[in-house]
Length: 126
Image (cartoon, rainbow, N blue to C red; front, side, top):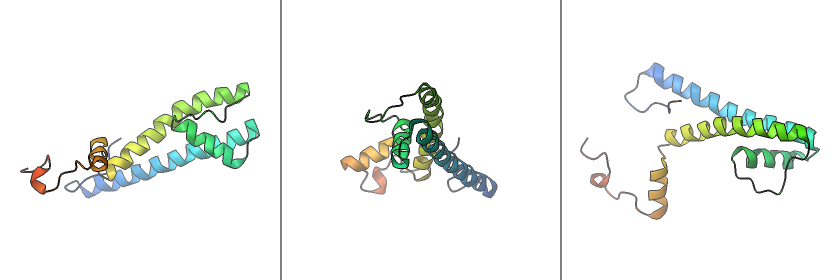
């Protein structure tokens, strides 16, 4: 899915990009909400533990402190992780592009290698 439009795009395209961004945000929140509810009832975990596991599983962190114990929750986890990675990963990708943050930019800023002047930027002279 394309990142929200930069300057120079048509107003209709910019409006669609903003709408698509909101849909992705709602889908990401929906995935977390569904996971939280399902784990709460299938595993009898607290709401906080269920949300925590949903975030940990959906972002593939996997600390290992909580784990599904029933066959139903294990099967749900397979589907949840595959769909969750796709939706949450796409949302985060679009969000970073929308904010103008790429992995290289984040690395360069965090290490202090960010360009100091306009002439040092890769787009200088365009």
